[in-house]
Length: 323
Image (cartoon, rainbow, N blue to C red; front, side):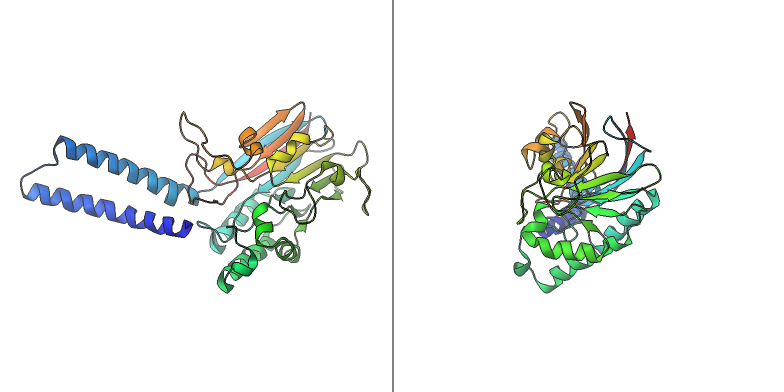
């Protein structure tokens, strides 16, 4: 459906100027102008044409780099530059391997200390068994492309709901093969000269293994990995911003995606669509509640409708400092 909308937008983008030009030429040739009603109709249709071209064909192809400064009392040691990429939907409209490689190159040029990928690597809601061979290859090629990401402290990821609708273990295996550390209620200690810290990743709400739990991520419930010691700083990755509602005070920063910043942000009206309660409460950007910090990425892809208006695709570099 999304591809059909894009094709119709291209047809309209080309057809309307040609049709308008032809109609005006015929009218002038016959010595007749459009008149008041005609000009009004032309104005309305031209406005709709412009908005459609902007929202369907132009803005979704853009890329904004958000540079964000975040401070936290739960952080210690040197500042940390975190590269954030979310919601790539690699097989979705406006993406493709060429654009994805360009996004990766742009992130590499920012030289972050660490890169985090916040889920929804796959577009659509069909399971792997319902996809054709070409579609599966497109997804596999997109996942393999993340091997090109470079960061001295590694590339870390969580899966999103679209990944689990497709096939979570397949997406996880492909990312792992690309050198990405994928976490599903997991954690890892990272050593560096400016002070060690922990990175944890929450399970997705659609995960077939478990539900997201800060307690499990921090090791407050028994598992095979050592818990996060008291006093050591930790950042947590989540696909959904909803999980932030129960974030412990000791988590210096939660990073989330999923919302797409609503994809559409209208003047006065604001964002008419929210994909979850958390996306409505924390739609986009940096938030602080009771000293806890959250950054929600608008992501780079589109979902459901192939549109962006007032919310261009984005990657972010979040610099986390001690307060």
